[in-house]
Image (cartoon, rainbow, N blue to C red; front, side, top):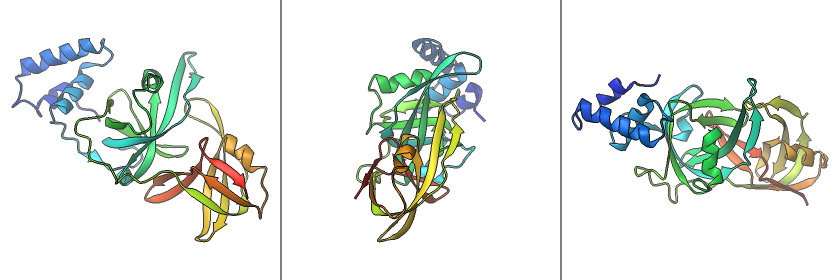
Length: 256
């Protein structure tokens, strides 16, 4: 559950009087063109003052239904998509990959936040902090969402040092295609339609299973069991402590 501004003030009452706290909230709310309510602004203010007592979670510790603060680096950005909601209103969504020194997960930006990608304020390599984000199971694993009570900070001042610790989320497999499972169709939360199929490849280290998505599902249909193939730009995700291999729009599949 989110905290109210009254509850949040308890974290900074030794630094600001209640009147000063209220005045600052009003000022910040005006700067944001009243896009956020007072409780959300209070959370942002407390975080800026270094008194956000909600400890940050590592990506490897994320679980469905959790509300938490997460630091990470953007390591992949998909194409943004437009969609129409059931009430007839239009919306936009973009899926990103967020990585820290323990693993990777999805980060979903909706509507106005998509402009952060369009304006290049967020790109691959950008460090971000999600305050009070909520975690849910997406179609490609766990993902962080920024809801009404969440705040997204770009290049936060308290960003932990991930240099030389962030694992590469790109990988390559070369081996023999031993199985292509049936293609499954699904609807995403944004209303768009997608496809996914699991494949198995045997290489020098054993047999590996990969989830192949959307256009790459069509590509894999051109291969047959026993073909020697090379797959590059594999996205590695970790879910419930297990490593998952995904081939999305950035993947490259070639026959040897």
